[in-house]
Length: 66
Image (tube, rainbow, N blue to C red):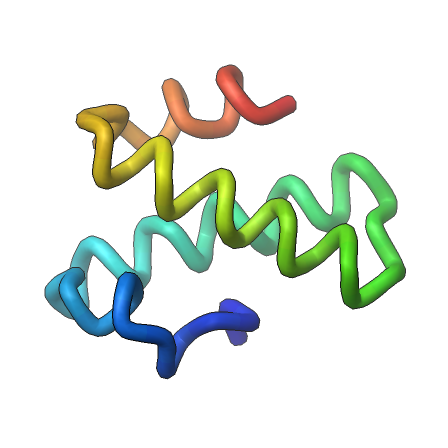
């Protein structure tokens, strides 16, 4: 589950948008081998910020944050 799935920022997303962000999050956590909670939260924050600033394509988000 996306670490901030209950945050105000995540609640502003509809279920399809949140699902997209979760897929990106899980892919990047695995690809980057992120284990610490702090790094996971930072990644979640960056995904949400990028999405809310207009990067709404799943592949573009992954490329941006890789």
